[in-house]
Length: 285
Ligand code: KIV
Image 1: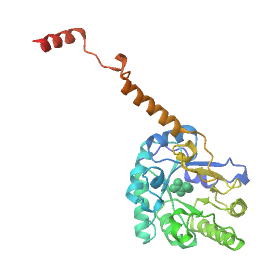
Image 2 (image 1 turned 90 degrees about the vertical axis):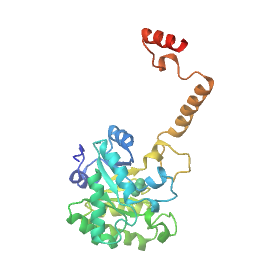
Image 3 (image 1 turned 180 degrees about the vertical axis):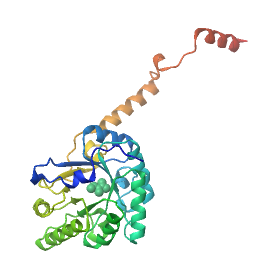
C-alpha cells in the first residue's frame, strides 16, 4: 500500500531540539479511528505499540501479543492513511531467533502499512538491526525500562539509576545509533540520564517517563485520553476522562431503551402512505 504520510523517517532522524527543532510527538494507536484522531491532532508519529496487549487485548503484559496481532492492528492503522509516520512495534520473540526471521516479521509490519519498526534492547540487538537496515527497513530503538524484559529486570522498574548502569545505557544507545537506528525511545530512566543520552546522540530521543530533556515525548493514547481508570504511572498526564464520559453515555442509552424513549419516531424508518395502507389491509384480511 502507499501511505499518505507526510512525516518521513529522514525528517524524524534530523529532529534534534538542540538544533532548534520542535520536540517530536508520538502517540500509540491500534485501529483506524485512533489513527484518524492522532492524525487530526497533528502528532508526528503513530506507534502501533505492543501495549496493544494490555490496553486493547486485555492481557497482563506485552509478552502474549504476537506478530499476527501486530500485523492485524498495523493494517487497521494503515488503512486510515494518517499523516504521521507509522511505527510498527515488533513483539517479543519476533526479532530474537534469527536475522531471517526478524526481517520476515518486520516485512510483514511494513506490508501492513508501517513505514518503520521499533524493537527493544541494546548492543545485543545490533545484528538484527543491521539486517533490518540492510533490507531497507528503518529501525527505532527502545532502551531503559523495556517491558518485554520484565522478567529479566525483575518487574517494571526505573532503569539506569546508578552511574554504572547509566553509562551502560549510554553505550547501548551509541551502539544502536551506530547500527543504523534513526531514533530511540528512552523509557523509565532518570531525567539526567535521558539528557546525557540525548546530548550524546545525533539521532533524536523520544522519552516516556524520561523527563523533559529528550527530543520528543510518547504516551499511550489510552492513558492520555483516560480510557481506563486503573492507576497510571507518574509520568502519565491525563488530558481527558473518556471512560467516565463513555460510561455515562452508554448508561443513558440503557436508561432510554428500558424507559421506552428510544427509538423515537424520528429514529424509525417509515413506509409511504399507500404501502402502509396496503399492509394494514393485508394484515386485517
Ligand atoms: O508499546 C508501547 O506502547 C510502547 C511505548 C510505551 C513506547 O512501546
